[in-house]
Length: 430
Image (cartoon, rainbow, N blue to C red; front, side, top):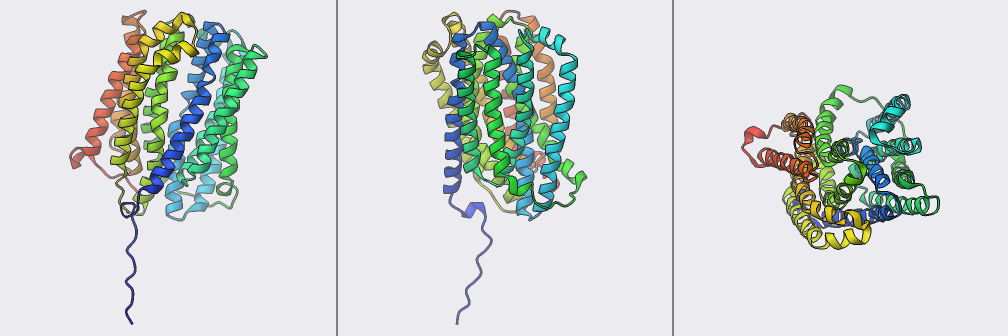
């Protein structure tokens, strides 16, 4: 009687990519729907003064500057890695520790904000302290949301990750509309909507991942953990810094009324990156899982092709349809300036979207040699942006041209480390 030969271990290369397309398609659809809900807040700009809308845009960028992307990717990486190597109890302790430290760090920041409230309000031209307190609460939710979303991403629970995204967007737009139209709350009401949306997202992710933080835990290697997650934090933090901080730099050099078109153009243009991020988000835990099991993965080419196609088509669509969308959503006073800025903003987002896909692949495979160059690039950007704004006063396209140039340099660096000679491709410690 013939004995059947045991099948060889399956790798991602041997599997159909149907699961990847299904998961990334669902996550992309949920992100688009959530983005439309979030964008539904911005027509409220017609109901509030331009200075209030500028305040809202700045406060929104404050919450966006929280290192949500590196925090989510750190926990996605650890979740995928520990589940692949059957070390779930160590993951339980890690999640609890991360939850505790995010609360401690937020409490310290809250005390600092309370002590320097007056100077912060004067610097950001806030009309009421309530805006500051609501933003502070939103920051806490924006710390917990990526932590537990990372756990869902790492375990590849994309179904509930998508629903958390959708329901967070729905909560944001409904609450903001009621706060502004019924209670005339201005920027504070719009930020309260953001708080409710982030809170709903965070609570869903916390509930869905409860089996991974309520069980028994065991100690983990702290030093080895730092070696694994610190490069991720720096790399994804660099991407997020380039993605979010230009508005806060520009806020210091332009009055609220003049900055409103910049905020409007940024809201539309950043949607390009949010649309393509799900491709890399689905790829990342699969790369981590395959690397931990010494398997092969050929997803990068698919993700790069999809990211480039979607980003370029999105930018072209924004160029064609953007003027009509701006006229519908925003007040007539800054429609022309918003339309003028759209091509610059959209152009700056395309290389960042492609670089983000490459960074996800490099970090998922543990190739960390690129990280010091990314940090150096971000430091140079941080010093260059205010210099350019001072040297060319009154020109809103200058920060976008600066951002686009640095994003293009980042993309070139990522290409070198991903596809260059083997000297660039050093495998990180496992």
